Amino acid sequence: MPVPGYNVTVIDDDMQEVKPKTLGNIVVRLPLPPGAALSLWQNDELFKELYFSRFPGYYDTMDAGFVDEEGFLYIMSRSDDVINVAGHRLSAGALEESVLQHPAVVDYLKQDIEEVVGEIVKLVRENIGPVAAFRKVLFVGGLPKTRSGKIPRSALSNLVNKKPYKITPTIEDPDVFKTIEETVRKKL
Image 1 (cartoon, one colour):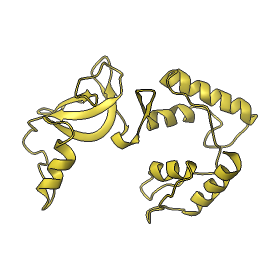
Image 2 (cartoon, one colour; image 1 turned 180 degrees about the horizontal axis):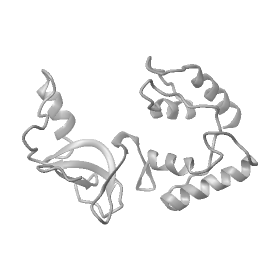
Image 3 (cartoon, helix red, strand yellow; image 1 turned 90 degrees about the vertical axis):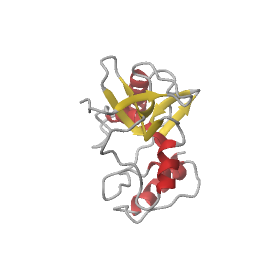
């Protein structure tokens, strides 16, 4: 729904508006309307640095998304959760949604693993396009989640890439990391 006073648009890293259905940075053109938050409690400088320095003339929502042909805005993920593949920006959230379309994902595996991997790779390619060179799938019993239900993607990325990672105190079941680490060690 349009909100009066907010001129929301999607731009690339060079501050150019992107074509419909192209992933970019969701920003709000300045000036912001009356009633919009214009500072952080006792830290105006940090507010300016976080939200106004990356794209001068815009408020940076720090979200990535796109606008469709009809003007509807789709928020796909946080800007820091976007993957750059061969010069194309891909949303980690969109990749996850593609994978979750397969019926064997989440509940249980009911087919040959190689067949399921092939089907998942095909789903990602159909939904995202050939630029999504998605080839490896790792099946685990569960994913770590915070109490608010978020998946700590950066910690998981570090784990899979055999880099140091931090388990935050808000993780519901920290033992899930150990299970995933063991699976990564065996399968990758």
